[in-house]
Image 1 (tube, rainbow, N blue to C red):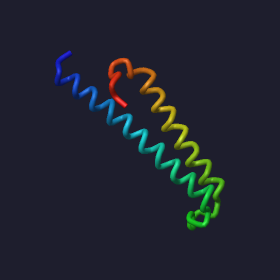
Image 2 (cartoon, helix red, strand yellow):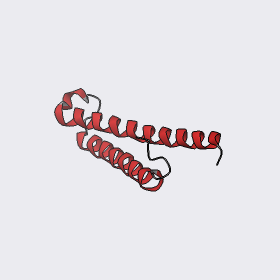
Image 3 (tube, rainbow, N blue to C red):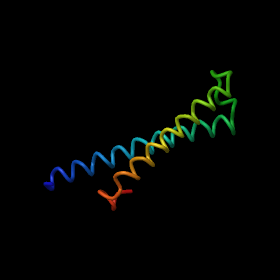
Image 4 (spheres, rainbow, N blue to C red):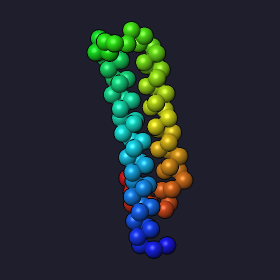
Length: 80
């Protein structure tokens, strides 16, 4: 594989990891608000629905990260 293709592949891998990491952080932030400051979630009267939504988002992001790392870390061992 050429160096250019290798760099592009590494960059795409890092971008995918960064994307799912950001989604996980966003979900955690929303859950923190729901659990620690429910008044901050003013427009959402159904707090349980919000908690389920963000928990699902967090689980999906963490599962995606785990999947990527489980299948591709050997190709990019020095990445994250």
